[in-house]
Length: 260
Image (tube, rainbow, N blue to C red; front, side):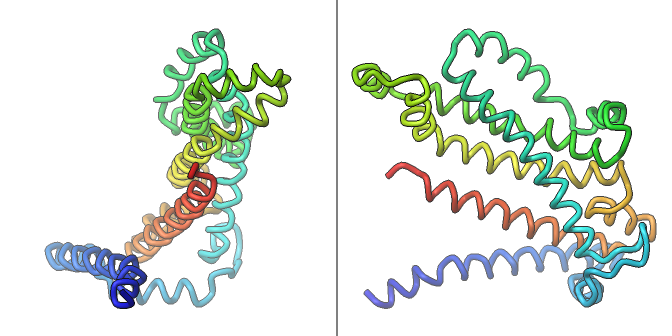
């Protein structure tokens, strides 16, 4: 029993190590096949260590440490994601609880949702007259759809029995929202938020490549201009790791509020 318990305890760690071995092995193989045109893990690791040695240096607008770049990107991501959530959750509650609202708004959602994030960038520049505002704008627009759709689905899935009980007890509209709609839809809302933060984190890289200045996306583009593939690969690893941590955070929230 103890052996089984110990195995189950360390199983996630073993799978994580196995995944890392597969990734590094595939990476090393690609490096060999391309005659090191794609830097090997060891070559990238050496540059990565140099980047981490002084992550928060600031020598001017276009010369900042990777820590500063990452913090700037995270601020933009959470700004756009937060604004998108403030719009998506109330609108999703409305669409999910009203067939009339669904019929009016759903066609708009289906038209706007597939639009590429980069297509919104010129409109953001026009509206905010600055690349910073435009970048947050495209994150806002593209990250709100998963939360909106999942929230609406959660509200629309409330069983009729729940609605009948609320009517029998004479719940006011506010009490119905707070005691029935939100508790039932909360797992779906968190699922939407989890998907939205993933979208926001993907969009930030493309947005910062266009906007320039500072940020992890700009760092990738600047490294490409400097022909430093090691820095690009290091940035990709950082982007992936941060994305994983964000996803795990919302996964924890999802399990925390999941129905038993």
